Image 1 (cartoon, rainbow, N blue to C red):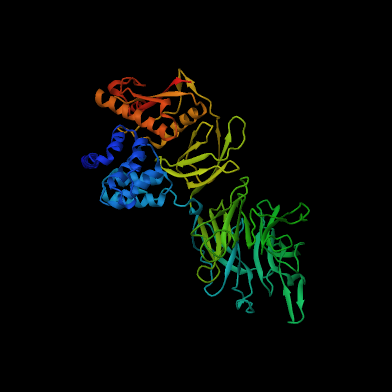
Image 2: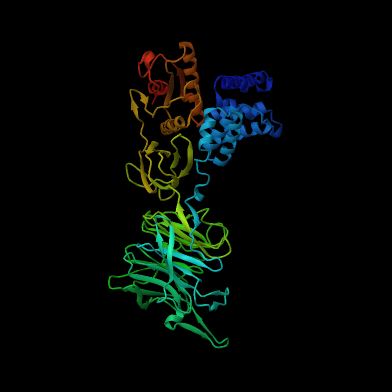
Length: 628
């Protein structure tokens, strides 16, 4: 502690030494009076690009830090450190704070590592080094799954399209066939359907064998099987039903991919039926059956396709007939190729596309069909790579999935192991009318009160996050014209979490001639506006904007620790800092007054026996209405 106080004193003495410079006299006076808005304006007049005195950079950073202008504070801390990397460790820490508050998490972590080297025994260093990457770096690319080799792949062929049935039988497509006839496209054997037993405990496959009654001399697979294990839909070539086009000039028969249905008879598959929407001019492939067996998803380039290949679906009626195929539309499909659909038991649609923002080749995407108008998500690294990644399947009850990839130069099947995350959907509405609110600011904070991310609700009133599971979070939701709201979210075991936040339209909340806000607390012996403090003061800003004649007196109070004289001066500085924040938000100075009362008016009269919570309650600001 002694070293920290010495460091802080050294930093302050540097400022005071420069304060004698005539050029900075006016700005320094504003700064010394905690008038940080005016101080920043005056220091800005002295900025000279790379020739700017580093004292100016530091004073600007400190001014913006104290009124919680995170972007400008980070900017000038960065300039100051670039000019002089030997600055005190505390400057690095404040810089990291402002970067995190601005959403620049990667850079913040880099700065914290430098802080850690400068102050290795500091508790903040210890806490950071214990878990340096708890704030997600890129939410759109949050790691949802890890992977490992399935142990089922052959080294000199192709394996892909894994589907795991309810009885732990894995169906997959492979070139490990006894039929040595090769396919001219890649000189590999024709594809056949195989099955293997999967042990969920050991995660090992056994009893691998071809499904001989299904396979033909042409390509067969992939497949999907109903929950009761009695119905299979599988892809095969259209030659199976005599459906092809003859090219007489080249003496060729040109087939397409078709779907067939098979029924389990004892231990064998039989009663093969062609899907009625197969065609000789287009392909129908890669089937996936919903858990209830009522919806069949597939890929096709049939008429009505938006691009090279689209995802389609049909409803299966009780009598076994099918509705007309329905294209899933531009929400899923593009002008490129979408294929390999899979519908999971929790109603998420996974599929591959080569035409959406991705890493290259085919990437895997997911769409949560339980969320109205949910956004499509790229599964991100390490599942997706610059190679082709496709045929993703996932089984929530077994907590395992499978996907196919050619990242090592051949098609292989890998296991997808879910990372424990919570997919959070926050919907913001008007408490009074129930209508959705777009443009609401939604901050999500971790249990250390660090901002993880700041987003704004879209036209659906929706914000989507992916956060770590099994820990609590806090939402801070704000919108002009509405009272902000803080929502505490308890730890969640993972999966999907839906939260609706209802904001109340702002009305002046007055009790005994005071505007009531949530408590604007200060840290012990500190005067700067905190994240929580700015959230509450923004409500007052909105109240005053809606009531242009209103005048407010800011009254600041301290706890009882310290001398009466010291606490009085501390409260005056806090009142002035609060006023400066209001000025920075555009409130005219003639509408504001401030006064500090020290410890003379405690909210909780606990004398020398106050708890930390009681001390915190006494460190507060109150807002008295002088004129309505």
